[in-house]
Amino acid sequence: MSAAVYYGPGSIINKKNYLSGIDDKERIILKLKACAVCGYDVRIFRSGHLKVTPPVILGHEICGEIRNDIASIVNGKEFCLKSGTRVAVSPIVPCLNCRYCDRSEYNLCLYLKEIGSSINGGFAEYIDIPPQLVKIGGLIPIPNSIDDDEAALLEPLACCLNCHINMGMRAYLKDTMAIIGDGPIGLLHLLLSKNAGMRTILVGKIPNRLDKAYSLGADLALLFNNEDGVDGKYDEDTLRRVLNYTDGYGADYVIIATSSPRAIEFALKIAAKNAKINIFAGMLGLHSANLDLNWLHYNQATITGSFSSTPNMLNKAVDLVSSGQIKLSEIISHHYPLADIKYALQATENFLGLRVIINKF
Image 1 (cartoon, one colour):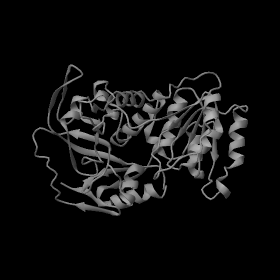
Image 2 (cartoon, rainbow, N blue to C red):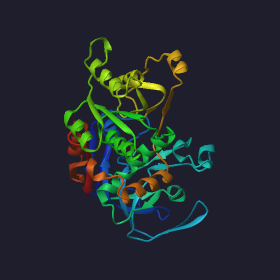
Image 3 (cartoon, rainbow, N blue to C red):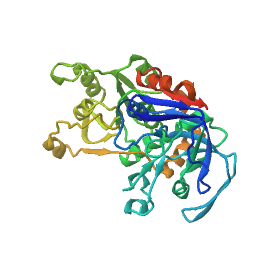
Image 4 (cartoon, rainbow, N blue to C red):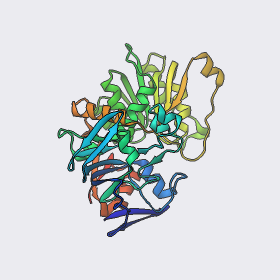
């Protein structure tokens, strides 16, 4: 099959006749319809990752078509899918034997493997799906109202849902969500926040993305770029505008959807009393933030993290999109064939547009 194989930092090679082990009859074969390029794929391509042992095929935001009938038992119920069915794929492959798997917290599995990371992923013509993924309901049928490109973005939407659910979001009168990060993930958080009825501020560093945020319903979109700031000082005007907008209280929810560790310190500056702060993005390297423990105590604030999602959340994502509450097409800007995978990675790395989709294999 055709595949873009990652061999190490800076090395990804298109193969025309790549042998992937798909002849294993115990596994389910999908033909790729679309696979989105995540910032995680770019970071692996440039710098590698502890979880990734090359050679491996990257890509985990997947829409595929089943090539052989599936019959299994999922959560005690018979589960059947016919050949030709389009599905979204949950990329988590749990062990099914640890405490977290017993609780259906599959994304927290002690021995978790991941499609597009430790298992071959979606930058290929075909992908084989491990049986344990089928057993947890990780293949979600896609209704005709969702096209292939949108279906590839159901997985990151599910991850954002995981974050919002774990934060215990509610929409009290005048409660405010602040999202730090103006990439596709930040914009997905924005769509979910507005759908939940929250006043929403988005803070980013690319002007045209801030314009996009306004078009998607942001109540306030602010430019913030302190990467070259003196002595690590924050953009005081941005801080002032957030506090003014919230009548001096600060944001009740803050999501850090960027890999810059400085965003954590800014989040602490704009958080209200009893605020929930979520570290959604993986940080670059090993970093720590200056944290005043007395501030955390006296302000009754909560700092949490979220990672990936579960099939249950992927199902919720399908419902939100199929009902028209969330329009994923708003987040897609570029399309590339698999043969141009390096250009697709470069477009993502250089912040050209928004989400990039591979849809010709």
